[in-house]
Amino acid sequence: MEALKARIRHVPDFPKAGILFYDVTTLLRDPQGFRLAIDSLSAPYVGRGIDLVVGIESRGFILGGAVADRIRAGFVPVRKLGKLPAATVRATYDLEYGSDSLEMHRDAVHAGQRVLIVDDLLATGGTARATANLVQEVGGAVEGLAFLIELVELNGRARLHGQHVMAVLQY
Image (cartoon, one colour):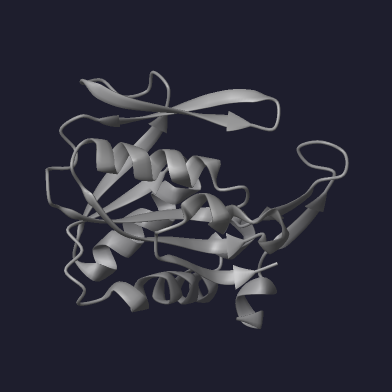
């Protein structure tokens, strides 16, 4: 996995002082790195009967769409508030300062469908937990959550208790 880590740019003090941002755009532009990332995210779920991959805005769209294709599943986007045109379900979650909301089309996941949630980063787990709640609210079964990067010291897995969590890279 060092080959993947070598392709991720580290940006200090972004989006604010004291934060080290892991910029995956440098990985995504590299054909071999992108392929390795998608292979690594997909491999545990091939042949597991996943019906849908839910990708979290915005890098989760890129990774999740490719994973969905690789495992032969459909793709569902989870978006920031007000971006989807049809009836939605909404989950609000806490941030360090304030709160945010995510939405998914109400009819995007049907009762009993097996869902894999994909995003680029697991930090505190709030966004992932909110997404899992959306899937479960409409009757979907969360079969796992897959992340390219996990920031271990932020302990986001704790918010996802009871869920199968997989991260390709850990920092």
